Picture 1 (cartoon, rainbow, N blue to C red):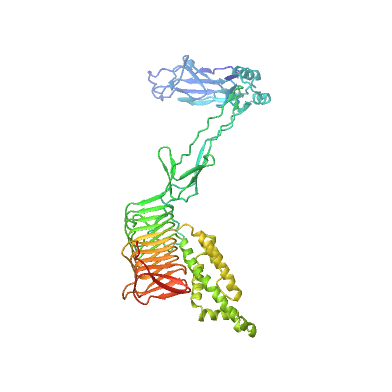
Picture 2 (picture 1 turned 90 degrees about the vertical axis):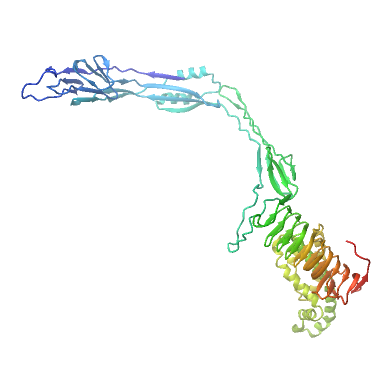
Length: 615
């Protein structure tokens, strides 16, 4: 609604004064006369007009801004030739002052806005113009008329007509109407509804195929590494769902309730390998694998298996995945496969590396490669074997040291102190114990940064023996650590291959070779080793049992067989180039034996004949 108030001003036309009439342009000028153009001029509000002489041009008037020009009582809108100045009339306009207002209701009906506009009136005059054949006329402002204040009652009437129910701000209305200044002011307010909160899904896992490569050492770049396969571990939070929350109603300026916007909702749908907890608000991975969103409804699931349809080569790069891996081809030279779950290779493994937290199965050959099942726990198996030997040897060292203690007390010499005598005993009588201590010391340096508390405790173990009391302290620590390692190795990971040559295989559980030959390889198992065929050269180390069809070969390289003191070694045929070790006790096989089982009895390795092994 617009309300206007205006005042009027009187319009006064200009007077016209015509010059003496001259002969028309059709009449030739007398001899010696020059042609002259007709002219129009304005002086002190009076129009003067002269006709042309001879062949001179008739005057022309051009209407400009802020002026009205009439010729022969007709409004001139374009350049016009003036033949008779008495018919010319110039009228300067006068614009009346305007005071107006408008009331607007906001789109959400919570505010009433009063807009006031004031325009001053203007009185124009025609300025003096020099005589010209073509005269352009424009009006100039002579004075302004101030606008009047707006009558407030008109505003109140409009408010009543619109049906505004909320209280109005009369002081604001009065100030705006009396100010004579253009402005928009809020004169009444309701209350908007509080905003509704839409349901929201926040994914805290990545869905990229591979994680970006972080090159921490610019001097060493592995061209085979294309980044780890995107994966998560069991127990990882994948997504959060925030349920929708409706807002509170508001109040319009008409006194009506304004309902809040209906919140939008998003549904967190999960599939394989994912479980919703906390009333469906949190999605947690229940298995190791690759997170993905599938289907039109974006179902969140974890795929536990990564399948490589061909070889592991330049097209795939290294494989680094936190789940199971199935390779339908070969693992080629120089490539690595690291998995958080089980690894199965249907082809061969050539000069490559496979590390897994679970089982490893290779259906073909393993040549010049390294396989580790159980990942870092294989370190615990190796350390556990060393601790087992120390537990046997340390009491013997302590007993020998006790026998030498009177000599230390008698001479009371720093040159022949406890540290010196312990060093002497290790060099002369307990060389194997000294070797075990040095091996453990070498392993400690690589264990501190692994994060496992048991490995950290092993890394902090003091292996240097400076006094007799430290022998007993180290013995007690070894007993305690062995119990903790057994608890850590509760779940075993096995390795099964068909053929093994010049390779290293470690497993926290069993190592099984189902083919004809193990040649010049190093096998280590936390439980047992089973060789279906022959084992020629290399070293086999197991905690509990080693069994093979044939151990060693006639005239071949030496084959080392190692088990714990309470373990067992069985074979259908054992050649004389085999060295059997139980704990700290060794037994070089003197001649070829068949159907034999080796055990340790009363600190002596005994060979017993048995029935034929069945695999």
